[in-house]
Length: 587
Image (cartoon, rainbow, N blue to C red; front, side, top):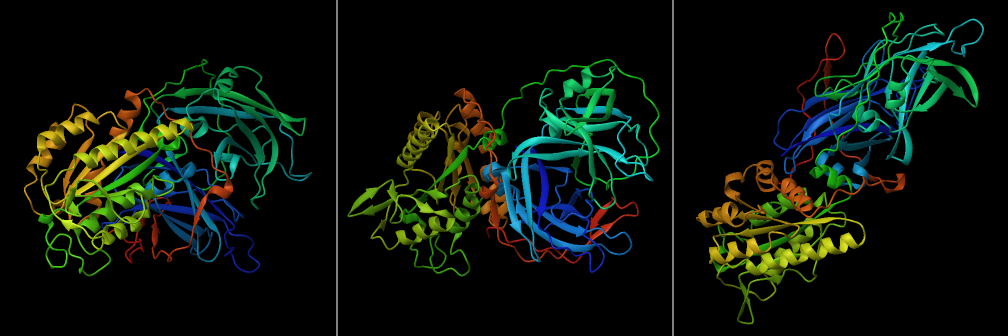
């Protein structure tokens, strides 16, 4: 199940690359999406150009499809727009969409070579329609001196909990009209999700500025309003534009209507690019005023992204098969062979790394319990025992180290393959984690990853156990390692319970494609998480607020080697050959 995710980008303290005596850079950003499979990056689009600004806060939003388990990365390339000549690179950064969604406030940052930081934010993209708007200014105050006339444009800013905690962020700008104190702007279409999150009563700022080529635009005046207030103002004398308690002209509303099912605002999808701010002259012809429209916002069913936005964490528990059928780990060709070359020694480690790396993005402390089953200690078979010296390990690397340490803990690989104790232990962990979280007003969900080399010894008992724990906040992912007959495990996937909480995947079917493996194993988790919370009447918490000092700022990476070819109109973009550096996947 995929969800549409909306991305916004800003940068701070970029290096000025305009050159000596050439003023300050005019930055814009190009966004691309890529994956771990070696496919060519695809251009999503381009932001507007912001003149003379080394800390640009671009208004353009971009929409991408995200699916848990599908490794998707976003490349942000920032250039200085050069009017005559080639644009100059200012830096680049790459982000995993999963890591951005899993970060507090859906916000991450990365330093770039040469100076500066790129900040990206992800949120659920909802198609709640657009605001069709036409306005004019009346008797605006001239801020251009005695011999010039102001060039007015308007912009919307909304209050957000985002990059620097509570702040007003620009979400839309109009074009400017040259030398006109009674500007008649053309019809605009503004994405309601971007403007107000679909809440027609949410208050935002509407300001009118005098455009200056230096980028230092001067405020003429502004108001605080909402979509419903704009619609109710049609046919009236409009609003007084205020600046420091003084009237600086009026703003008249000719058309303000909600258009359902549109996405015609600042949200851009794939190869659609927002142009730089342009002169909108001459003034648009007058339009007939339209009847007032008032549409109440609807409440859609909460999704995976809604719960994650509210701070819901996904715990990971790992259980590993140490039965004798895996073979002697000292012998090449056996499933637990410890002498393999490369970063990972065998398929158990490859599966742990691939799947664990995706889920780790959604666990803030990244501490994971690791269990083993199917081995003897002191002559007694253990169907669930702790791997490693601690009850929880740190990160995915900690899981692999605990797995390796188990072979020097005095175990005897034995049998049979029984996972019922592991299932009950994982369910108990999931329930206790969620109860502790709920006591603090938070939410937690758990994924139990079981890696085994064969079918369980008692399918019926295992099916009964899964049915018993079906109401726990738990998803069960079983990965079959090796080439055994896993038919009985597929039966558990399909028939163990009327509530689907289990998924079985054969590793060998995806052995050479990490993205295919994670997609197959994790694709059902978002639906299972939604189902659990909604069956229990638990709604998502409000979106998490993030303060500036809490934003995760990652170190710079190798510079991205990528050439963007612009079409004759400056908007149609393509990626030239020459490659792009993308950090490697899990294996």
